[in-house]
Length: 217
Image (cartoon, rainbow, N blue to C red):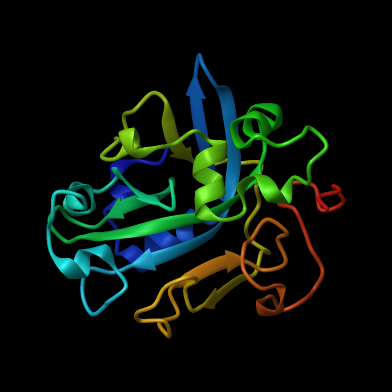
């Protein structure tokens, strides 16, 4: 079931935590269907967050971040892209960065998009925001895209994933130079597709969402 607009209109920290375990889907004739479960996110707040793009105020490049909830804010980084889900009321300038997903459908298409061999390690496909965008072929043209009504890209609840017994951890965000101590990164403990240091997990044991015995390394 596709997530409704009311989901994205919630406070940013709530959206960030509730996005974990949701299914991120891309579907189009050129790519086919590629999908994966969100396992790592970062929240960027509209106030008192120097690392947020909203801290500089509304600009031509970040205007999607100030737009309606449920839209995408996509920005370039090192010749790649990062995608953010816009949250809260229009004008707030808050969003959640999707950092990693556990791949599901379309592994071959993701590998092709990233220029990887078919025998490459799955964790290299979508671990990290730039890799994720490359695997799903998301670029700046998706800036402002409507996740609620769009036909090529959306986020949905997947009843196959039982999150009841999953452990969520919280940590500082990764790869930023400001507001480094704010604990605004959320991830599924032990999941091998989460980016960042493994020492931040409570255990070295890894577990995929649907099949914990699946080989991922």
